[in-house]
Amino acid sequence: MTIATVILLAQEGGEPGPGAGPGSPLFPLFIVVLVLLFLMLVVFPAQTRRQKREQEKLMASIKRGSKVLTNAGIVGIVVSVREGDDEIVIRSEDSRLRIKKSVIVQILGADEAEANKKD
Image 1: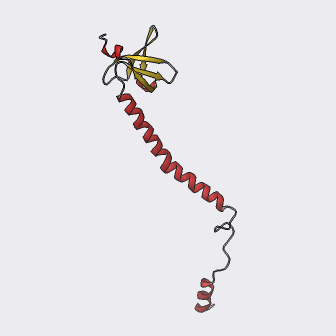
Image 2: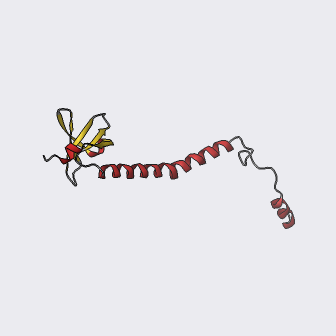
Image 3: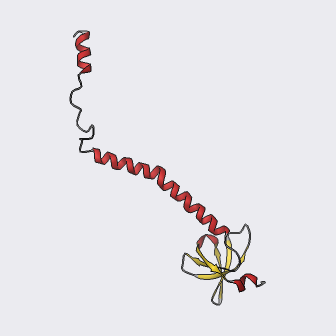
């Protein structure tokens, strides 16, 4: 083989092999894998960070007299909150419960009578 023949053979494109290019039956699978990779690396971590910020904001806004809902469905009024402590005391009907702040999922409002009452 001469150098000219090698150059001509190298320049000749020919048909792409199986599994290459947009005409391949594996191309849709490749696109799906790319979309899933994008979701895992970009969208899901951003959503998790946003939820964590919202939870921290909720924890900071809990104060005495707030009416709260726990993840177990218990509705109560906050009796005492200590700064730096992750537990609070709530009153629900005739009972007092000591719960973690992290179980509170929603602040429903405020009870003015409880907020002004001295313990």
